[in-house]
Image (cartoon, rainbow, N blue to C red):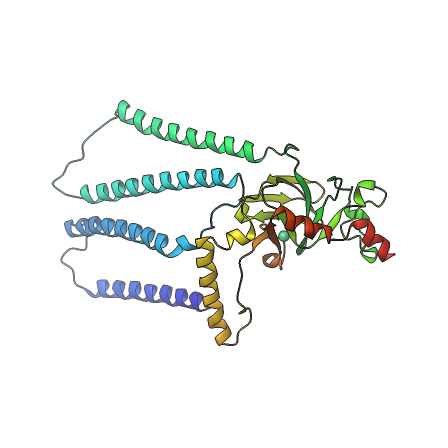
Length: 352
Ligand SMILES: [Cu+2]
């Protein structure tokens, strides 16, 4: 609320100053009241162009200084490194081109500001110059697009090589449920029409399908490090999007169809907690939380880093809170955890 009020006050102050300048101008008896810009006007406009350039550079440096720390830490998946390189290169190119072109734009606006003594030069065209400024963007953009397509086809190549773990991510307003395919690593058939809440069949699994009996339904995602995972996404109601930012993964969940994404986690939760960027972030957030705790506010318990699955489509009023914890652990830890979970067949038997 305070930022909004501040903006409103600033806008009102700006309007007041503008109106006062107009009144002041009208009350002056001016020698000439011409609408044609004078030499002084031209000079000021030229300097203002330079001032705007300094403002642009200033805000860029400020943003780097202030907001670099909110970026994601190193990618925790096999494909994530390549994805980050592509992103970083695009950023570097945009940064260099923007810095140069903004300088040229504002410098020439200043250098060739209005001047009564100067006559415009008639310059029809220059083929060589036009060729250069066309071919350079063509080569750079073609390179970026080709690399992007290559990265995309690599990331989206979902296959059963290297014995992947099959996990279903089930989205509904407003929570996630995960289903492991069990010992046979094949998910049993499911359909929202077969959902039977009274009998604990929350995902609508087909009782008659033998593949469903050993499926394991959980509310916390455990992944063994270094093992490829094939995710199958379903949605019960509206469009959701399964977003796992630390693994550079996102896929829409669409009612009535199954979408897929695949990745191999490479860093365990315990290892990621030691990452300097993560340590720094945890420290910063816990600083804010300690301040809140001192004021007796909610949400002030110390925070510990965890990977997270979020919803990245605005799907309703509690969309912001639609999340599930992801734990990447060693193979042994994962095996112990999965062995302690109940299969769908067993939970159905005990519900009846
Ligand atoms: Cu959602």
